[in-house]
Length: 252
Image (cartoon, rainbow, N blue to C red; front, side):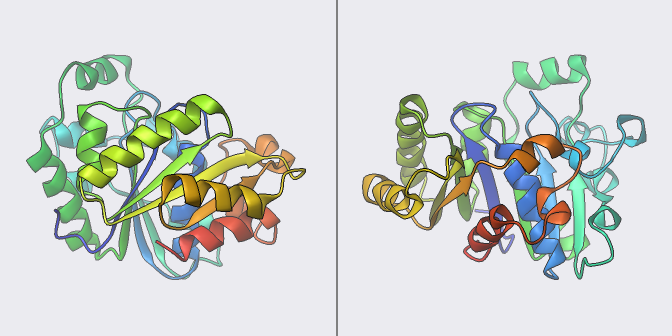
């Protein structure tokens, strides 16, 4: 286990369930509340964290890939994106982006990440940037790289949609996380219709999975319209969806 005070891994069984969006919004919310936050985009197959904070690809000179391949220092890859949160931010938010280069994506997919190097990078970020909490956005699914990310976590946040395949896949990941002795596991059922009884849905999830805090996030047209251009919690601080993300953040 890393010496970092709090590592929160945001993961999902399938792609396109809102995992990266939730990671960006949680990181933003915690920074707005006054914490020093790090967000590492290790979703090598679909790097998108930089989009939420208006960080253009031509402004990214160092990435998490560079660090993992020993091509650069991880601090050089960490960018202060606090200004993108507006004047209300009381803390700090640092983003370590992943590369969008096809050749670099293929390179990282062909090999497994070095666990010691990975932990070293997270520890360096915590120490040099004086972080209170570090969130890691992982690739969806289960492979050696994601298992490594889960294994060094203090908290695992699993995002899923309300369908049978996601329920079954998430159950497998929960079982794996328990075997890896992850201290806390939270489930986030995303994009839920308001016609459903959210309290009943949460009760069923917690009974079936026996995990920690569970949250349902309602479907929001505003979120779809906003896309990945800006964190939702920044654009809509008083929205019911923001209130539910805040509820989850309080349990990290």
